[in-house]
Image (cartoon, rainbow, N blue to C red; front, side, top):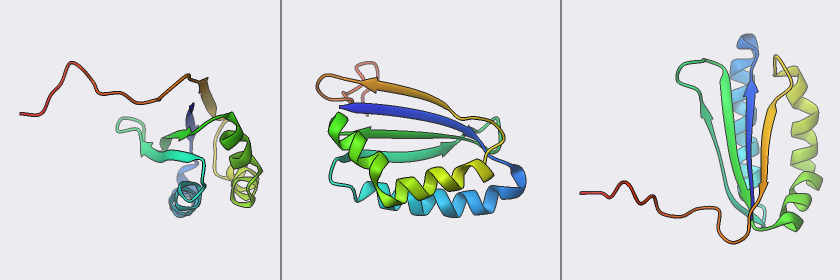
Length: 107
């Protein structure tokens, strides 16, 4: 399982364009056969800072993702959206990326 967390700061004047683009990109990535999950979130304390959390079945699925047409287009489009180079945390995990949290159980 591949777990990727990406943090990007978006130009305030590009916010609407970013939101439309990341929405479409999310839909495209979720259709990939090796994608397990893909979500994005805005930082509640730092407007226009977004985090993307994505998981892929394995490194082959991750490599296939980077080679897709929609990823290639997104990576070429993204520099005009950001204020600085994004930060990335890439983890190649054995087994599942998700497990239940032991400390919290619904009532």
